[in-house]
Image (cartoon, rainbow, N blue to C red):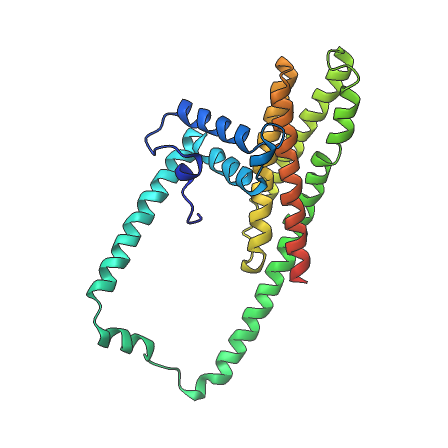
Length: 250
């Protein structure tokens, strides 16, 4: 969990109701949406807002998040208390505590080499079994959107065109489910933490985008269409960031 507070991001109280959270989310999305207020458009803020709503908008995730906030608060209080009680002599001793004798240097180097090998194997496994398939599935979701919308724009009220678009959205749901399962199949190594975070938020944006686009197919409200497109646009940016982060590792 990051140091950010999702309640602050949505500008709501920790005791806010689900309806209040949703209302705040809609207000902020509209405020920072480029089609509504160009002078206030903010890509990074939209990412933060959607990440916050992804958690606070779901009752189960919100309960878990509240528990994490409480635990973090208790830990911070404990650390502060320990820091106040710690004497200067204890601090000095901890900084200059027992060192391994030089006779163990060869053993330490051997352990470091094995650790490096293990880390490299974990990285290659994550790249091949998680990153590559998730990357491929995201491309199948994100890349066809523009063409799908272009076809639908000929006549959104045409039943056949709408059925084609709905079939695309169903494919997106299937691909997203596969990608989420694969993403959770292995823990990410520390050196790809940045890429993993981008993929995590990308998948969240895709899920929200699909939901908005499906709402558009039910009521033809352009607001859902624009929000869905914006969420997919953000997801595409996060997808690219993940790709750049992986390339930087090499």
